[in-house]
Length: 131
Image 1 (cartoon, rainbow, N blue to C red):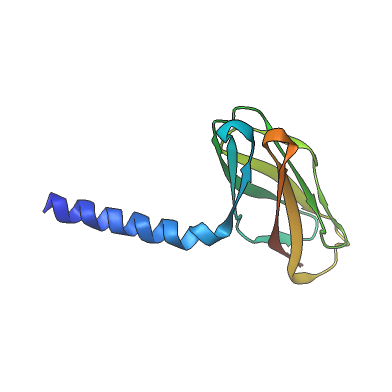
Image 2: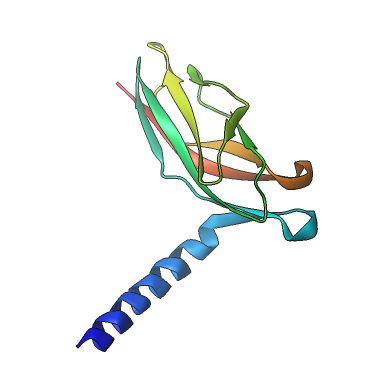
């Protein structure tokens, strides 16, 4: 019975990893240093409020800070601390919608993560602004 349970969890893990494999970028640095950047969830903002953009990362043979900047945001939305430094597990930036922010649905914004040797990975995420 425990063997079947272990196989079931292993199969579930394999399915989860296969499903997310297309949703990541890898920054390759010298000496086998890498940063894997995973796709964040979509963001829904309300006018006058903030939400956090959380980008999961995994560092391999790399212990230096990673930076991230966000751009192509909808009108009236700003990102706090554009050069945020993070640890080995994630980057977190507050996105703030002004009271006059443009209403949008699934706007395509971008973020850029800088890792080893100054190399970057740029990805898109969707952001919506509601009342």
